[in-house]
Length: 171
Image (cartoon, rainbow, N blue to C red):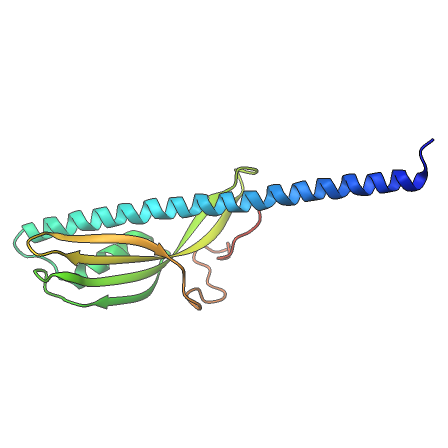
């Protein structure tokens, strides 16, 4: 006969082990969803940079190149309807200028699903920087990169795709 106290302790240990396993699996799900969202947003901003570069180069080849502000505005317009602009800086408005001509920083949302419950999506917020540069004798190029959002980049209560909130939710 098993002593009742031992049986109770065995149940507690089994329950604790099960809860620990569930927590570990759930945290892996969130990490997986975040990575999924980051990969998706990275692919999107890289494609926007490629498209903006092609547009700037075609525009420049037409003989009446657009200014730096026009290229940055095109980036903002094509990124996402729910993007929020953090800052924009035009350093050189001359299309024939060289070096860093300008940049725009945006807050973007991305969704990702974890490996455990792939149908459940979590919303994540990322900050992206697009820079327009030109080397001597070369066409203008738009580059894109994600960076850590500065404090206050996402105002509390910002709901770009309401009703979802801009925080990660466990999956």
